[in-house]
Length: 316
Image (cartoon, rainbow, N blue to C red; front, top):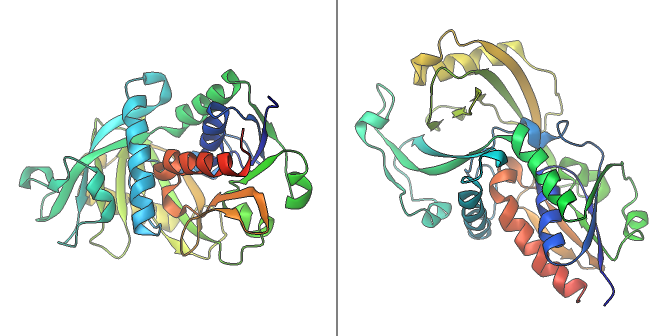
């Protein structure tokens, strides 16, 4: 039987996860990325399981559920960088989000789980995915299965398609030019990294005009955030850094005076809904991009759907 070949365009979390799934399905796989970890947008992400700024809700809930199940397994393997965390979502009462249906423990937060002065919120199990560990682990999984990850820029999708039986576009914001998708645009996010003063739970505050979050990792805390539509500026804004620190200290006073380790800016690839489909005019081409602020959260679920589409596009 002839081995089917797949070319993945994009070496962020979506491209790398898709590569693992296609290798497991029997494809030979190459990943081409204009940038490789640690220089991808995925490296900048706070990266905790939380479907944020992404549509459509029913498909998102399914993809998020599939990813949750994988992260639950990976959390038992310290080398992956996946850590189970309690998450507290501060905010007014609302209809229960579709994605919460996958969580057995989604509930109202207890008063002692909320910051001082806050009366309402939800609590649930989440996972923090520490990208400095996790993305190299994914690359190791690809290489262990015989796949190849290369730094290689692509500006002609039709030419790239001639290099393999199947092409999967996981290029994030780069898909705007590569797939000629005028609907794709950046949602700028700025994050602040500080030394962890001993925090162990994720906190997300959606009561203010901007989302605020605290994501404790083993060696640091990622603090956010911002959401600036259409902004391509990747330079850190000092005033925004100060505002993020102030908002996070107001929620968690133990962060006051924490050592500043760095400020990162990432451009989330956003569109009205995730694009995950086979191309109508090129059946051996699959699109998997536009995950907004939920690329890590949806990664395994979207990769599983790509595998199903690939099996139909290139039957064994």
